Length: 353
Image 1 (tube, rainbow, N blue to C red):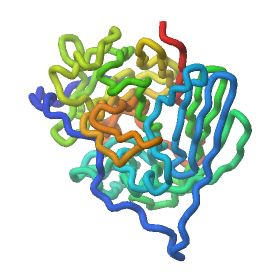
Image 2 (cartoon, rainbow, N blue to C red):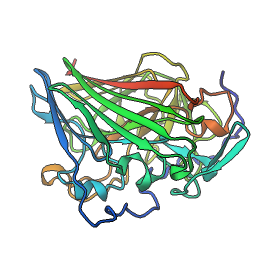
Image 3 (cartoon, rainbow, N blue to C red):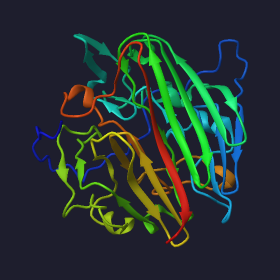
């Protein structure tokens, strides 16, 4: 099903762009000028405490109760999330990552999407994507919440009325993030969670990362993944064994690249650890995008903490970026009319080994 290399070595791997911010303005308030309110919900069990918001179906807090460590970046207020240029914690879609030239062809029809990132579309329209929508709370219990959102036909250029849902569920020391959807037209559907993780260090450079594949996709000078798969051996992209992130970033300022698995079904994709905690990331999605956020520079985050470069990293399980324009060498994120699809990411938090 993969992997045919069509792009020559560009020599641009060391010129990594930041993934954000996007080019579009922040969304406006409702037409009646009434400020939209977004409910927040707390999920809790003996191991974890999690806070999630209707704004972007966002993961606001992810707390290990034994150490009281919150391992995700975020904000206290909705206003800050509405200015959130980096999609901290959000459920992004309708399509995670970039679609080249903000267009694709499906069933012989070419769809022109909104542009928000150097002529491409990023995260389903950036500030007009799912991360900035109000998701309705469908159900809530002590350890689970389900959100829903109706993305109408033509929204940000995508075909089909898409009924999407996001579920957060706690189970012992595990947080499940799951998305599902169905559409009345064939469409693209490729969501991810865009949390930035930090296990409690000054920066993620002080933490250790392992990724369970030896293949990655290089990107062009504006961050679009190329139609090419390379071996990580001998490169700063090599995390096949636990590596101190600072060591890999000696050779490159930032990593903003897709790691290639191209298999469906549950698999361990990545582990992040320090001397106190270990986060294991499992998913049934085919690939995972790593973003080390070298230029993270937001307003003050939760509890008065400013976020700076390398303040967190994103481990975005998803489909191969721009796969819809690269053909069937990759698993394509096509949702057929009348079908229902569901995928998940599972975050397991343990004490360090």
